[in-house]
Length: 316
Image (cartoon, one colour):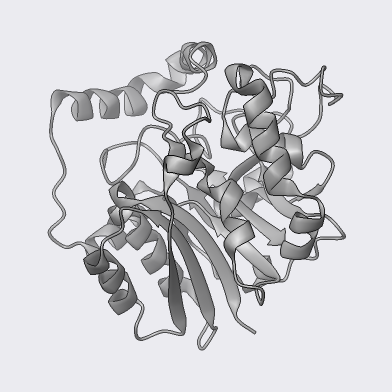
């Protein structure tokens, strides 16, 4: 039986997505068939062919879907967010009928382990399995669900990160997850923090199973001295840092742009980046140097300020 993966990317994510693909190819168990469903905006035929060629020697096949954000112009966007962020909410309703389970993956992750064990996770009648968000582990935090009280959600309710999650397709449809999420966005758009992620957390409240944090370690936080686990099992977290499965390069400081950041896994990311793009050139602008300096030398001290600004701006 094929493992089904789902990603939603636009043309600006060519570099990181191809690194994600290669990192999985490097970890993939021999002869494990993988069908990767990619909902894309602006993905050229040349790019699609390059990705297919990259995986040609493996049992990995891609299915491409053109996604137009025009249908989502009424949904809120701000800062770095663009309408394409909502593709992950809609995409499951367009998958072929034979896809009864799929693993959603953001385009900025790094595999450091195979996915067979993750794929076989028992969902225990839940719609999805997802890891708690390391930055926002509870619904009531400043970047959590702003209207949690009005929605009847407990202050200490766990909040998941939507960069990696395993889905029971039939349960997703029975629960009407996509429509619930869209309805929430349309009703509360002005007070939503993390847009699509907020919507999925509300739509799936009480219907998700926690994954081990090793399957979605946030690179800018995990193993860094400015981060102190809150709402996440500390022993599980420590084991995850020493034996990670998936690293998620969420946030502003992407390693394909900022190669000198202090993430523990930037060197491994750059190694695979060079494997795929041996001629990749990094910018050396003042902005790049400044952000890298901040991450290496100042972030541990100024992280509370960064968090405050992040919450005030509802993201960056």
